[in-house]
Image (cartoon, rainbow, N blue to C red):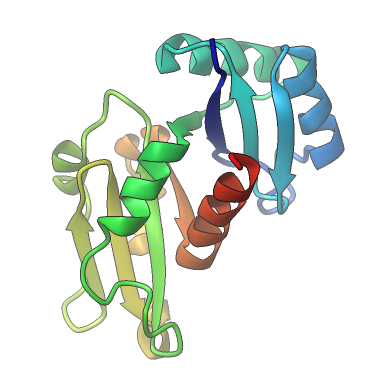
Length: 185
């Protein structure tokens, strides 16, 4: 049986001096869990790996339990397959991520069972600054770079729903997809 390629997106590590985890230690942890082809990307907790486990909930719970034990913090991670990440990138609203000089664009990944429709009920935008769209598996949030300090995106972090989200900018999201495509060859 062929292993499935996954991406684990950890929330809240190496941000503002909190939950500092070295990527080499994170990679070793995933390898100790029995995952193969483990690769980390930048310091914000992006881990590509392969596993024979087909149930994402079981897989996510297993990883969170080990991270909690090994690194002494309360982890939250979103686990997605290569196919799901491909769909998230290709289902982005028209023009999203195309004008990165004018707009900052982020993808808000959701931990199941949170749905984009449910998540959007908690997301607010500032007229003339922000736009937010619910996709099939994620939220897409853009804001004018010139007015980024007025954006409502930082307000999401204080909401209870944020406990089931993690955010990546568009460049990181597309780079992760490219890495997954390279690894799957």
